[in-house]
Image (cartoon, rainbow, N blue to C red; front, side, top):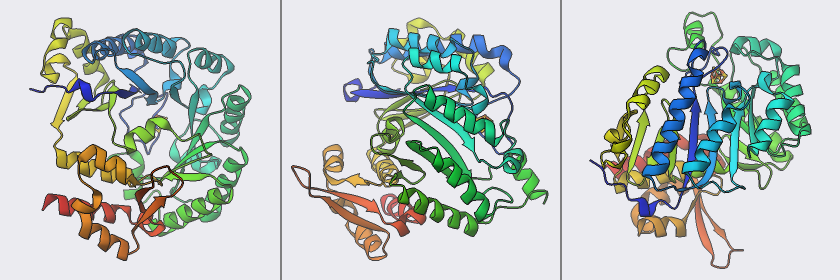
Amino acid sequence: MFDLKLEQLKTLALYIHIPFCATKCVYCDFNTYAGIEHLIDSYLNALKLEIKLWGTKLNRPKLSTIFFGGGTPSYLNLGQITGLIESMSQTFHVESNIEITVEANPEDISNEKLYEYQRAGINRLSIGIQTLDDRLLKVLGRRHDAQSALNAVEKTINFGFENASIDLMYGLPGQSLEDWDATLKTALSLGLPHLSIYCLGLEKGTPMTQLVELGELTEPDPDLAAEMYELTVERLDELKYRHYEISNWAKPGFESQHNINYWKNQFFLGLGPGAHSYLPGVRFSNIKSPREYILRMENNSNEITTSKNLKDANQVIEQMENISGTTEILDTLMMGLRLDTGISESEYFIRFGHTLDEKWNITIIDAISDGLIRWETDKKADTPNRYLQLTPKGKILSNEVLARFFTVAKN
Ligand code: SF4
């Protein structure tokens, strides 16, 4: 049983999961599928039912951002994303200027789709490029080559999408530092306002991990990957990008508002199979199978949306966890320290009613003396405020820093 504290819900970030891809990349362990296109229409109908259910249950909350992720949202046909946005506008409060992002793959980007996105109010495109090396694109099982990726980005910019981002990955099997530098240089020559750059993770059960285990692909070297990260930091710093989160860089004003919401541990609602949500006092996630999601959504009764038990109100919810005060504090620290601004001392106090020093004094002192974190003071603000931030060394060892706070909280 759970009583949602709706008065705490001032605004909400909305995530929409699109679990379809034309083909499955060999490294990918996201909840997405190739070859189930016949489910798309019934899936979109189910998604509209979930949009309506939550908009009603939460009393038409105001959305701060909308993010279509996946999977490949750009794989949907013309008009399908517009249809989802129209449904949202009916049951959520959607202001005209909020950030609306669509994740897109290069091969889907056409003038027709860009036109549709602009008319629907989509103002941010996040394009999955991963690398600009044709040999490595084949290793990853991507469908595009480097030139078509560059053409897609150019088309997006020329169409007037000022706020476009690309995703890149380093630490790939058989990738040298020189290979990575070449991709980085070409990507940076595009002059984009935002880049998300991740180290490849070998996820359990993916074809790529199996190939590495069988010795058919070279296992990426973590020391080389660390050098690639350092090179990335250096190159983007030279071009005055703000390294606002461990894996994200932006020109001022182009930071992803949707992701900042996550890193500040604020509320969000995720719709679709496998999507996660965080509402006041509770985290939950939906069933992963798209087929089962469609069936359960069709069987949800409209009358039970008033139920206080969330799982009764929405039968696609698979897992649910009540969030204690301690968990909320730890989550706020773990995610907030990923941001370059770190954790605002005054925001922390307003949210939790105690200062960072009161609760974490010894942990903070030790981590500062080990060169992992630091206090920065914003002297320009009307009321000077301090921020607890990771140092460059702390960014590399961020897991260790977070483990220290975790250990104290659990004792
Ligand atoms: S396109 Fe993206 S979501 Fe789809 S399989 Fe490839 S990496 Fe995964």
